[in-house]
Image (cartoon, rainbow over all chains, first blue to last red; front, side, top):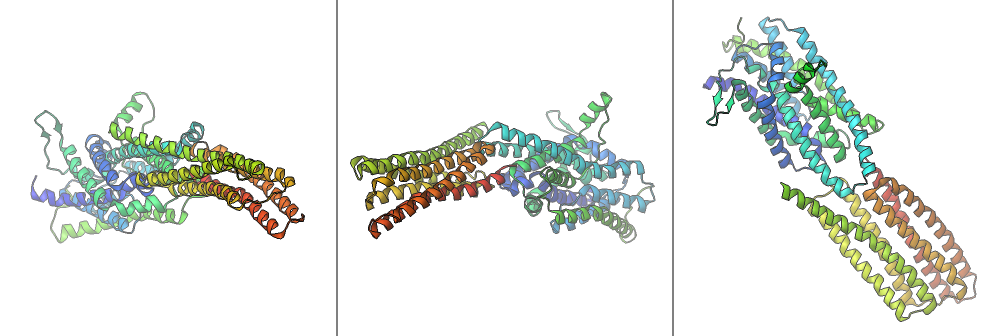
Length: 351
Length: 219
């Protein structure tokens, strides 16, 4: 691993850090916000499971991003990731949960424009369609779960304290599953653009266990996400956990499960193979936004409860972020590539 | 991990028991209060009355101890963070009802009021209504922890009984002032009747809050 590679990879690591700071809130935000799980516990569990998901199930969504734009030089990949990271970071600073997926897609399209490469509009429309499907699906799952859980609680006559204990365990398990799904789905955003230009070689451990080059890259990305979770996610957690809507811990659990299932559906190669082998329509492996999934779930529950608890102005601000993030990221990438190529004499794309 | 889980559930079970015992104390004090009033009216300040009055005092002390333990456990184990304040409030409200039973029983003991024979039956009725209010509060509050759908039913009973108790107390007080008893006696009886009726009023206030807590508890 040479020094230049590390310098270029730094933007991806920064993006990973931003993703961790931003998206951990979607997994454990509600649980920490309602004080059911301590931040330390949440950070430790998410870090471990994000890395596992990234290393062992991160390749599917990453392949789709490469089909959108094969960023074929390290310098180009550096700038694509940096533009996305700066866009996300600026949003995170203002406490708005934003979409890293949209930032990276915007940046890749910006790179395509700059490099004169054609953008695969089939893939782009597939990705963009998931931006709509993801929150809608998450909302539908949340509505279904809400009614099931409410019925279960009312019928079971479980003591409040016992219910509290089960909810606590449920939140930790759901958080672990959410972290795994986030790592599997969103590592593509962090390291996907580096896959084609990475000089990393596979590593075989003494016990025969092998990590291929992409997995190694995803491991590094996973660690950077974990650092983001540990160091900066608290601020966004406060937004998701407290401001979005008044959530009870049980509702928090439903929200986390709903978004985790959606992220898993769009990341699992095994599930895709299973559905295809049985002649069923499969979910495309696309990096989707966990922020959108959470908000979709929160709106779903709000609708199920009669639409009283939704904080519409905040949702409006978040929706504005969805539109502006890819646009800002794309424009930033295009302009920065120009400077990187003409001022710093770096090759930002290869013919 | 297994050990942590087991210990968490045993702590929870322990606290569940304490909350149940706390509700039992309200039922116990209410039953003893009915007995105490009947004993006072038939035997005045007899040994029997003293014994029942002491029992009520002991129950009140035990309820105080349980309340403190419940409050400490809820905070030290960081349980039900979203509803903790409501549960603490509920427990404190129920404790106020228990305290009122003790206070009224003690007042009978200290003041030794002269109660004419014709007021015995209506006073027993009033005391029974107040006790019924408290008992239904205990059931409603217990249901808050296990069976939300029943809270409303028992709360409704508290409202109805409290209404009856208000009417009954007004009639009794009016009847007291219609007698030829000395004014000091009338005032003393009036105060005691109001104190008995207060038990139902406090129970009603508890139920008002309990219904709000129930809405918050439902997902």
